[in-house]
Amino acid sequence: MSARITVVGIGEDGLDGLIPKARGLIDEAEVLVGGERHLSKVPLGGEQRIDWDGDFDAAFDKIEKMKDRRVVVLASGDPLHYGVGANIVRRFGADQVNVIPAPGAFSLVAADLGWPLADVKCLTVHGRALEAVTLYLTPGRRLLVLSWDGETPEKLAGLLTARGFGPSRITVLGNLGGDDETRTEGTAKKWTGETVPDLNTIAVECVAGDGADVLSRVPGLPDDAFEHDGLITKREVRAATLARLMPLPGQTLWDVGAGSGAVAIEWLRAEPSAKAFAVERDPKRAAVIARNAANLGVPELKIVEGEAPGILSGIETVPDAVFVGGGVSVPGLLEACWDALSPGGRLVANGVTLEAEQRLLFFQNEFGGDLTRMAVSRAAPVGPVGRLQTFQPLKQVTQLVTIKK
Image (cartoon, rainbow, N blue to C red):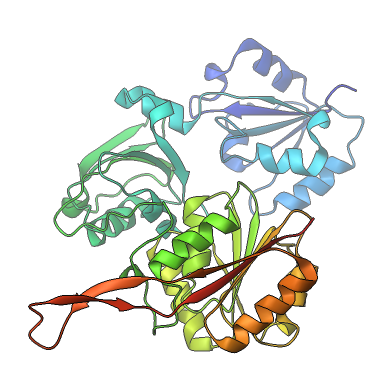
């Protein structure tokens, strides 16, 4: 079956920048769909026009009823790279959609700067939290960021400076490919706040200054990287826990009894395409989790405030992995997490009390898995003078890992 919807990528240079095939499809379209900016680049003809500014779903509903008409959708650049093409494919199916891409903003900026695109991290903060950029701030890294509006460069410069990356070089290209293309350059800490077009893309060359927050995405961040009240899975145990949870692309974690949210946050940092829900009954700790998630570059972490296991039934996304770091001895909690877990999913539960150990042993006897006891000691000064050191043991942790066959 041939595709009945064609998505054509179009740049600021309008029809002049399209290949002949794309121009021909637009000329033959019976229905032309797009935002006002894109539609204005095509002279009026006899076709019906649907302007979807502000309401994609309503436009999709109209397209759904046009099964026998030639529908062409105009989109920015490469429609499948942070573009509307992905939404169209999800709605109508890949076999019903033909996509003809044009050079997108990332390609145009990389070409302008001479940056090999394969070596650049491409991001978008269009309709997304700016803090997500924090995850990728490492010395020497190059970033390309699709802006939300003309104020985004100044906000990003402020974020970089606050993180100790003030010396980073910023280049902002506005209205890429158009006759009114603009270019603004500077460093984050000296950014002037000069007005730039709303349609802009930001290039960042990350340079760490004194006191920069340089953090690896390998699990096991320092405990003081998180705001917490002592209820946190300690660094050494957290690294081992994440290894057993196995963050994988597109998979979902439930972090039950999340405390500071450290495990869920490191799950997302390890695999940004994954999802995570942090379940916490204490409102103050839930607020701490939100701050930690934003501060560490994963503001998309979903926080579920309430008492487990009862609150778990309200989470619609089935987990591929569940971590129980608090409340192991709560009756029915492990069983509820096990029941919710997808086939092949991993249940990891840590306990430090005798009661928790008993629950873990009971659960293992019924559902299988393996138990590990972890004992960690850290060197610390002896006495108030602190000239000598001795190892101070942390609380031992018993860990159960069970895979749902």
